[in-house]
Every structure is written in C-alpha cells, then in structure tokens.
Image (cartoon, rainbow, N blue to C red; front, side, top):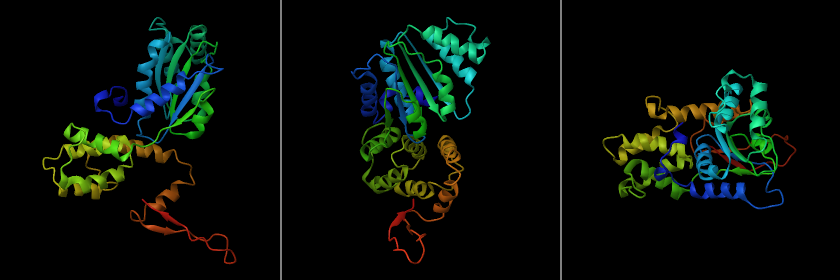
Length: 302
C-alpha cells in the first residue's frame, strides 16, 4: 500500500526507469496496435510497484479503461478478477462479487472486447496466476497495454507477449545517498562530514535497495543523537540483532518471502554462506577429483 501512495517529491532514482517503461509501452512498430505486455522484474524492495504505479498514472488517460491489481504470494483469484471488473467498468458492474471465476472472466472479456485498456498486474509469483488473468485479456488490435511486476525472471519471460522484460537495477550510490539524506534531513545532501564514512558503509550494506535504505534511514532519523558512534552501532547490528526495531518489520517480511521462494537446493547453500563473516574469501572446492586441475577461484561472502 505505501508503494502506491508515495509522495513523488520524496522519491529518488525513478525518472530513468519510468521513462524507459513508458518508451517500451508506447514505442512505434509493425505490431503497435497488438496487445503488449511489459514485465518489470527485480528483487523484493527494489521499487517495482512504485515505478509501475507512476507509469500507470502517467499513461492511464490515454486509455478507455484501466485497472491496477495486486496478486501476491497466495492470490484470491476471484477477488482479483472482481477488482479488475469493477475498475474497468468504473463501478458500473455492481454485482462483480456475486459472480464465480468463469463468469468474471467472461464479463471482463465482454467489457474489454472493443476497448483500449491499460492494466497493471502487480506482484505475480507464479505462472499459474498469470495464466488465469491472461484468459481475460482479450486482444482486438486496439493498442492495449499490460504491465506485470514480479520477482521471478521465469514469470517475467512467460508473461511478456509482443513486449519486453525490464530488469530493474538497484539505485546508484549517488541516488542511494540522496534518498538517505531526504529521509533523514529532508534535503538531497545533508550528511555531516563526521558521518561520511559510516554513511558509505551503511549504504554499501543496503546494496541500492530502496526499501532497505528507507527503513534504515527511518531508524537513524528517530535517534536523538546523530553521532557517528550511534550510526556505527546501527551499522554493526545490520543483519543481526535488529529484532527490537519495529520499523524493520516490513523489510524482514520481504526478506522472509524472498528466502521462502528460493529453490530448496539454494536455501542450505545460503545458510552455509551466512556462517562466514562479511567480505570473507571462501576458496572453491575441487569437486572433479585429485587428477583434475585445481580451480583457484574465490567467492566473496557478504
């Protein structure tokens, strides 16, 4: 919900991705009038929903009808389809909640059959959910557009038709610093010289993930004494010992969802890597036997 109602003045680094997505959705070509699906893919907390919403608000007036729905990990497909029907009909379909899933799909098709529409399908976790929604997305070559956001590259590739997959990058260091300053000091560059070093270290740990930066910035802003010792205390406890900070609940939930969605063979690998200190060099094991040439590569744990 907060991603949909962000104050544009407080957001950093969205202009480039927003324009890129607008270009992908509106570009000229032989198939200009065909239904085009553009997928935004990236890790949790990267800002996919926020950017999709900005593009949606920017373009919706160019379409006859539009809708924005969130799918999530365990989707209620009837509720999602009901929401789409209510939004595209501008609440003219008052009995959407009384229809079963098949009736909802047919009603959406009938309403969209001759209309140019824009629909955002946010937070799609698997191809099954997309396949059901896609049944309603009728294509009559009128230039309709769909935006899908997902953490899963396979879902992104599967859902894109006559469109593109846009892989969202983390914020640059410059934009990460601007976001931190805006959240703590309400200005683009407000870090005192004594805090420069610890700020660099904190931003490095955040890895350009807006949710992580915003969450840590909220914690730092709430501290009465903004000294480098207090900030180093937060830095040293990042990743562990943060249970007492309620402001981190949202970030923890997203990390938990991301971990739970990992393939089973990667979970113990990640847990094993978490045993090593940050920036520790981990030698690669020779798994080909004593007669083979030894690999001298190194992995960097973080």
